[in-house]
Amino acid sequence: MTVGARAWPAGHGRVVITGGAGFLGSHLCDRLVERGHEVICVDNCVTGSTANVEHLIGHSKFSFLRHDVSRPLSVDGAVDAILHFASPASPRDYLELPIQTLKVGSLGTHNCLGLAKAKDARFLLASTSEVYGDPQVHPQTESYWGHVNPIGPRGVYDEAKRFAEAITMAYHRAHGVDVRIVRIFNTYGNRMRPSDGRVVSNFLVQAVQGKPLTVYGDGSQTRSFCHVDDEVAGILALLESDHVGPVNIGNPTEFTVSELAEIIIEITGSSSEVIHEPLPVDDPTQRRPDISLARSVLGWEPRIPIREGLARTVSYLEAEVNRRER
Ligand code: NAD
Ligand code: UDP
Image (cartoon, rainbow, N blue to C red; front, side, top):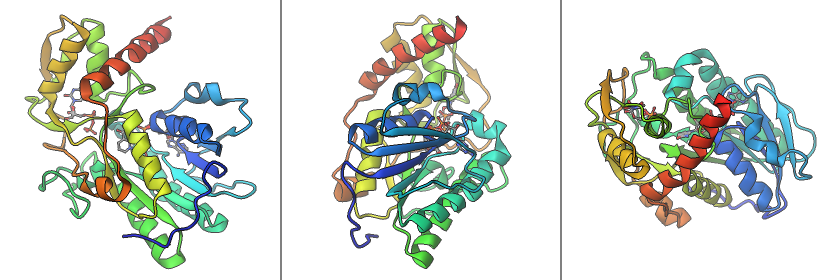
């Protein structure tokens, strides 16, 4: 689906990023400030940290607003775009914060869409591959409606994001808000929290500490891992395009979780062993994005192979673990 092109203010826009102190949001803050935009980072730091944006504090094009976007949000002056990234994102986080996750996906998205409507701003929603649930179509194309358990523990995240997509399209159709929806697949890189419980951070930290790598289930479930630099390039390409989406942005190279463990042991030179722990409830069996749409409408595809991306990430996580232990 495309929309009539609304002029995008290259290099001089005013952009609100919710969740801007998180992993992905902080990289978006960096790239947009580098491109000359003014960035207003809004975050309540429930899973993120101002440490992720402290290098931007004091920059004339950057400001930080501590706010829970599940409560009404107001911003003075003109706004050209709102990037709505606020939400717990790792399974460990959203299982610990089920109500907050549902609220930020529903009330938070509603508040941000209201702001976008009032400011006549472009609105980009950070959606997720989790809208496909435990998919029965493989690889996942944007036309697939998904296979989600609404009442299982993961439902708090999956259904919040599905509602967020639905209300985004409703504001687009009913109020003419200029929207974009990106479906983000597993992304890794610098500024992931070492303790976020995601597979890449767990395995890298376990490997460098010589602890056993905890493979859940038999390790035959698959994921496709995208380096954050590639992911952010894809998100910004969508923001600047005239395509509403949803568009899958992720790396289509698929690995089993056991293969990922082997690669991480290899690149870290670790002597860690692999142990097996129970598979979480409703853990998706297979996940790989079909990125034909991103390739054709955005001219985007990932460039960073997994070994290179993991090598870039391991030193960050190691330093971060040491810093937190001091
Ligand atoms: P993250 O936890 O590092 O960042 C989320 C940020 O949102 C945090 O800084 C947190 O404090 C903030 N936040 C949460 N609730 C808030 C609220 N009510 N008000 C204000 N701020 C709030 O996670 P991330 O990996 O950077 O994910 C960012 C977005 O991308 C999320 O919306 C997530 O669903 C989506 N996403 C991420 C991935 C991934 O692999 N990282 C995959 C799919 C989708
Ligand atoms: N996983 C694992 N060991 C860990 C953490 C995760 O085997 O220490 C598995 C998890 O069960 C899932 C996959 O790795 O199959 C990806 O998990 P993650 O939490 O990173 O994200 P998800 O894709 O499930 O949202």
